[in-house]
Image (cartoon, rainbow over all chains, first blue to last red; front, side, top):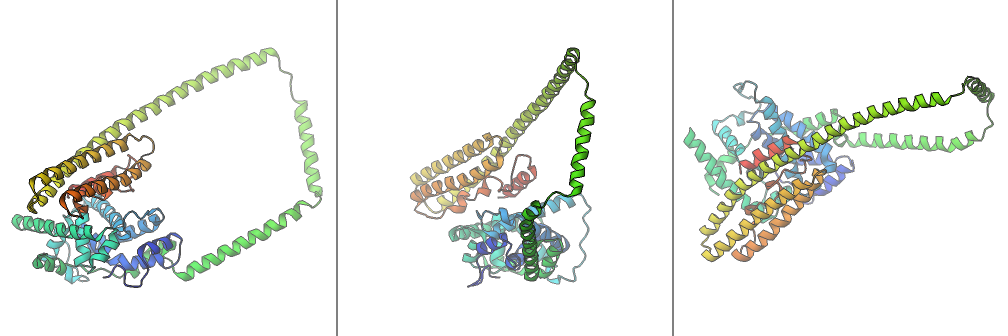
Length: 181
Length: 266
C-alpha cells in the first residue's frame, strides 16, 4: 500500500478539507488508511475479525467527530492509530470478564488461521505501539521509509531508527515466546 | 533486518475488508463527512433556500410594522387598562408594624441563605482538597512511571553508544546530558501538575516543551557523539512522557492508564 501515491492529495490537505466538510475528503482518508488501521486493530483484539469490524467502525466514527480538533502535531495516521489503540483497549476491557470462546475456523479469512500467523500477531501486540506501527506499515502495507515518515509525521531518520529497534524488540519477544512454548 | 523475521511477519499479514461497508455504516450513523457529494449538494441547496426565505421574511417585517393597529389590539389594550385599575383599587395601605415584621422575616431568611452558602462553601472546599490530593497522587504515579522507563531507556542508549566504541570521556559526557534531560523532564511534569484549574491547557503547553527539551538534548548529544539522529533514543515524541491531547483533565484516568500501560511495554 502507498500512503500517498505520487500526485495524490496530501493527508494534511485532506484533513483540512474534511474539517471544512468538503465531500469526498474524509472518504479518501478512510480509503487510504482503512486497511492499515484495520490490521493494527486486529492485532490488538487478538485476531477477532468481528471485534475488529466493531472497533474499526467506532475508531473512524471518533476520528470523523474529532477531526476538527486534530492539531497536526503528529501525522494523521499516527493520530488515527492512537484512537484505534484506545478503542481496542476499551474493547478488551469490556470483554475481559467474558468467558473466552475458542475461535471457530474463519471461512472468510482462511489465510489468517495458521498457528504461526497467530503467534506473529501476538508478538506484534506485545510490542510498544511506537515500534509495532512502523513495522506493520513497512511489512504489511509495503510502505517506503518516506511514506511511513509522512504518515506518522516523523523525520525519516527517526523512522529508520524505530524500525531498527522494532526488529530487535520483535526478535526478543519472539525468542521469549519460543522459550515459553 | 533478519530476512527470516521479515518473511515471518510478512506471511502473517491478515486480510482487511473493503472500506465500502464501513463508509455505509458511518453514513447510516449520520456522519456528514461520510456522505456522498450528491447529499452534500442537496444539503447545501436546502440551506441556501432556507437562508433566502429568511431574508425575504426579514425584508417584509418593516412594512408590517408600519401598518395602523388593528381593532383587536385596541380592545386588548383597553382590557389591560381596566385590569390595572382593578388591581390598584385592591392595594391596602402598609403600616410601620407590617414593614418591621417583613424586615424580621427577611433577616431570618437571609440567615438561612448564609447558612446554606456556608455549607456549599464547605463542600466546594472539600472538592478542592480532594482534587489537590488526587493531583498529588497522579503526579507521583506519573513521575515514578517516567523515572523507571527513562532510566531503562537511558541505560539502553548508553549501551548502544558504548557498543559503537565511543571514547570513555564522551560516554561520561553523554551520561551527564541524558541525566540532565531526565531531570528537566521531571521538572516539567511537576510544573504541569502545579497549573491548577486548566489542566488541558497545561498539558498542551507541556507537550510543546517536551519536544523543545528533546531537541536541546539531541543537539547536545549530537555534538558529543557526532551523530545527528538520536530522535527515538531520547523519546522526542510527547507521548513518550505524557498522554496525548486526549488527556483533557485529571478525571480522565482512562486515558492516563491506557498511556501508562502502552508506554510501560517500551
